[in-house]
Image 1 (cartoon, rainbow, N blue to C red):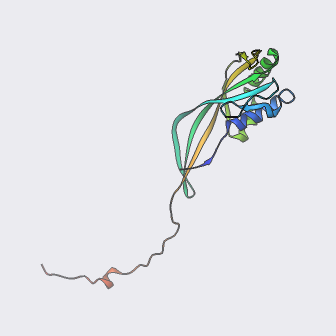
Image 2 (image 1 turned 180 degrees about the vertical axis):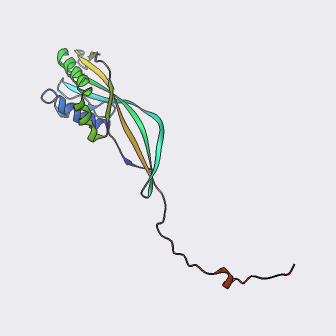
Image 3 (image 1 turned 90 degrees about the vertical axis):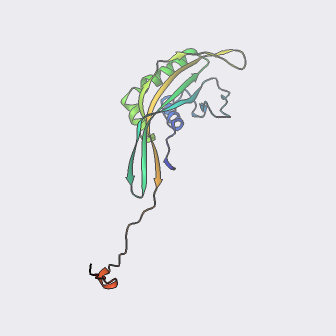
Length: 180
């Protein structure tokens, strides 16, 4: 099957956080949590997005579109957003701002061009972590639940015209009359 429409929760989350945290978090400090090489920057204020899972809801919808079958499945993606900062109040406020914003109509409008809708956001939690230097680094987290349509297309062989040469069967293949 040929996948022909992809949705990236990382791209959508980074755009949302870059917009919402403008001035507080450098867009280059918004990282993918499950990708090799996504080490935290030298700054102690950064965001780590980790997609936890994709959950399908219902059966795929299949329909013919042009010369291909299109299959759509409603998906839910759960993404954990960890916000780190040297100051616990800064991390908490950024996490709470994200949670509050995703429940607004503006978040729905913001995520629509990326193919996502907001379903829910968990309450923020303090999960302070110990840094590599042995010093606690405040981390506040929330989990966002977003939905999108997973689209898959399968081209099919087809034709759009037929040439028919109609001939009278009785002329070419004369019937044989047999007396019974």
